[in-house]
Length: 202
Image (cartoon, rainbow, N blue to C red):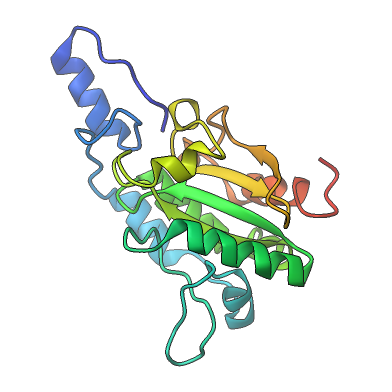
């Protein structure tokens, strides 16, 4: 969600910050898991195994398959290495790279992840993108990486960036268009992915 400037009315604004969760206000923001978001996540459609493998964050592998597998926003990963690997995969597969900046504590990030796995968005994502989930912690992690691609001050999280396989930024959600992902639907996510796909209409 969007960054809020906290001036006066401390009690009311603290309550608002706690409710907002995905604020760029820094480490003091908290985001308890929403029962609605949790229920939606557990009930969400999941992509086929082939789609999941194709769309998995670069570098995250499973022992069983040797293929990359989704793993949320992992604070222990090397984001720069993951982006390099994704760019190489995208070049080989004629796809784009989708950078997804967020954090597991953020309800909007979790809501977007559910929609990425939906029947509407998953095929578009798998066909056209190599997704890299980059953990930004509580706006205190991988900020140097994020700063090369997107302005987290205006974008909030989740923030999406589409890169060409040569690393050129095609678009970034600096306008905060995904910061309230919990209020979006899978059709909107699929439309964004389709618009910025390699052959999208933009």
